[in-house]
Length: 360
Image 1 (cartoon, one colour):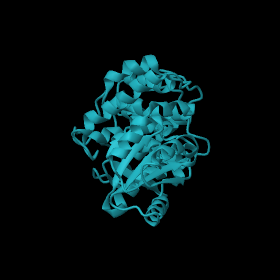
Image 2 (image 1 turned 60 degrees about the vertical axis):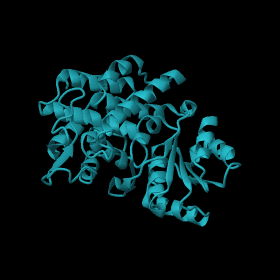
Image 3 (image 1 turned 45 degrees about the horizontal axis):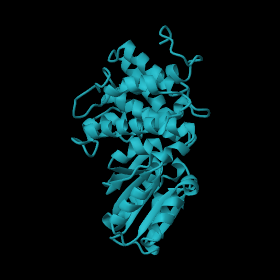
Image 4 (image 1 turned 30 degrees about the vertical axis):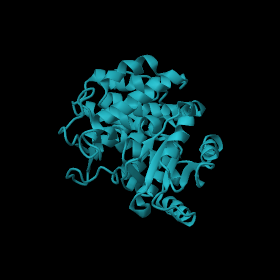
């Protein structure tokens, strides 16, 4: 915390504007605020918890409140929270005065090990996730691993799904670490968290160095997100982002297997890693296959490749660490009927969540 405050003070901001949610507003944000308020004019802005707050109206309200409080071009917006807060603060920072400085202080594993390493800032529309946004580079990312020890198990597992995704797509060197270290109870020491966070950030950095806007090779990081985003949106905030991505990954792996692209052993590895992280291979209660399929039509990867109405562009694998399709745009057009079939087979019809080679 001393280093976080010291680094923030070095920015010599005209004012600091901390954005957080109600949960982090009770746990960590007040500590940052109390330490910073004596150094410069500081305000704390608290939004509702969860994905429902990730909206245009929330960004508008934040911008309105900050302007009324006197923010100017010398101000710094500090995101103290998880991925939702990072996106809300990031988009607000990008839009105010056409761009003010942004600092991430992530408090969740998914933010610390994954989302803060992206320049993408976006909010949702009712029709789909991350449909309204832009690119805005943070001035700094300041991570206190102690924050992660206060997370509930579901949030730790959520972050681990993104680490699993990175390992399967671009950082296969991390697979042995995951096979030996994952546990469904989501209990990890500070030193284990340090290794996990570093592995996640280095995996993203490796690709983003050559594709900062994630429109070419880095599209691989969208693995599992096509179906995952649809499940997450359909669940209306009841399912953590990473868990939805985990469900999306198993569907993507099954699609690739059905197309003859992914070997049975690699499909089995998907099941093994996701099961080690505690995933239940079923659609969330109240989420129908029909709703998921309707939301797939608004996936934010639309337009990268020409597709017929009955096709969906997906990130698929043809081997571990080998996204299918062109290297500079790893997207495969898949018939919607096949995706629907795989969702039913993987997430609806299976009664035993353990891996069954004969069933698959």
